[in-house]
Length: 111
Image (cartoon, rainbow, N blue to C red):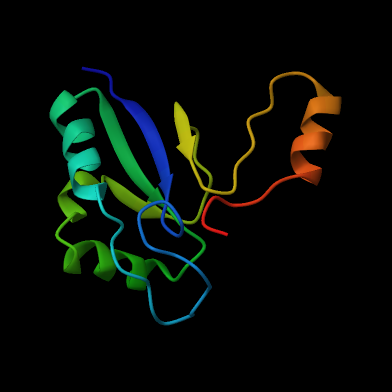
């Protein structure tokens, strides 16, 4: 069975991110385990963690938080995917004027 790949960003999506600390990843965000369990149980998706952080540190964080089984891999490369989930993303809808306005007014949800 073909599974659709979903790349999920670490900081601000899976954790309680407020600022970058190089050797410390913030705690797991509430609801993450349930969300990942749903994706996993559907058997339709292959989930990959996408992060700019040290990959070994991120992998250890997944294990420490008991969510490593939901991820096929950890990468810092933007791989081809069905969906990208990121707290700093803007979806391009074909209109550059609207895109410019979204960029100009962008704020991450946690600020």
